Amino acid sequence: MSDTTVTPLGLSPAKLTVAKENTYFVWVLIVSILVWLGLALTIVGLLYALLFGFILWLGNGLLVAYLRAEAVRVTERQMPELHRAFVDVCARLGLRQVPGLYILQSGGMLNAFATRHTGRDFVVVYSDLLEALGPDSPEMRFLLGHEIGHLKSGHILKQVFLAPGLFFPLLGPAYRRAWETSCDRYGAFAAQDVGAATRGLLVLAGGREHGRRIDAAAYAGQYAQERGFFVSLHELTSTYPTLSRRVTDVMALADGAPPPRAPRHPLAYLLGLFMPGGGAGSASPAGAMVMIVVIGLLAAMAIPAFQKVRQTSQEKVCVNNQRMFSAAFDQYRLENGKGAETWDDIVGPDKYIRTMPACIGGGSYSANYDDVQGYIITCSVHGAGHAGAPASPR
Image (cartoon, rainbow, N blue to C red; front, top):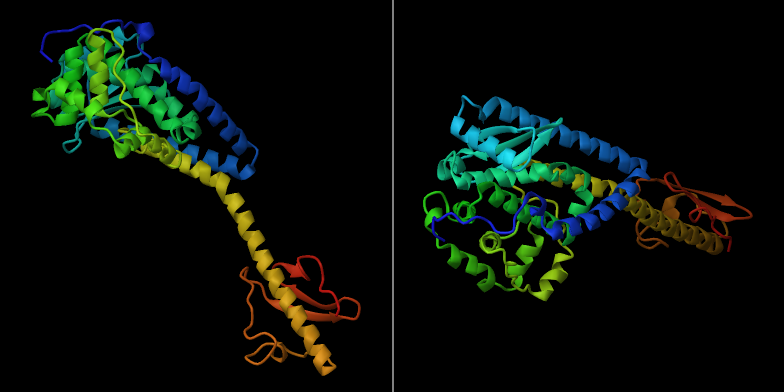
């Protein structure tokens, strides 16, 4: 694509969010409400939700503290060109309260992210990406517009409140990918230059030195040419559209035509059902924290059920041991005309029970004889008899 400015066609502030984002939102909201209601009905689940909510709040607070203390805050005095571009982007996208903008040294990474804490919004640009794009270039305006799109759309808060739905296989990642598609449209509208938006994405794909020299049409062609099962599975489980698809979508804004859609392998959908989302691939550290929170919430729901199944299984093993002891004592009495006095009378290599069974719940066994009920075997953990039903006399 040439450096000639090409204004995105058909974009307006009311049409920046793609329709599929709104559609996915409804389904993700339904799933999330059902999970939250399930947690609210269990005290353990509610406690876990509160605990991990606090951990998320604390972790994000520490991240923001790190930015405020270590990163460079962009102001009218500090990097004025970048500040002016940022204010212009906020105004064009209708964001009244200008967020804090910070530049963070990232060891060569080319990325940016937006976050929110205690009612304040923050946008962070990694220093190498700033050097690659320049402080007041249309490419930088595209990048800033993309992050402002996340804030305008409320994606930061949605990561928390819709976390259960975002973790849902296929649906959650699809919704997150729709976010990114919408935010690319925000960025293109902010830059008012489809070519610049494309070059900004190509820098992310090819690096700061060679990204601008990549043939955009050839790279976009990879989206349709590089297909197959694993590519499809990668697309379905990722929270970001592939860069080749993003370039394809942005280039389509030049004439307003619907972007082409490449087919996916049908089996990828089947396997994708068993691979939950969660945002592990998110550029923002908040995405990883949300992943931890969701795993904790799901564990809060699964652990009580697992513990109940485990307890029931232990009880069944203990009941079988009690029955075996009772049968051995009864047989000893029948053969010897008297009751056994110690465990050694029935347990041993040549006895009724070869080795002494153990209660896997950590209990110890005792035996008592009743003229009516026969031998009653008691476990210190699981109680007497056959799980509440004493041994029957022979």
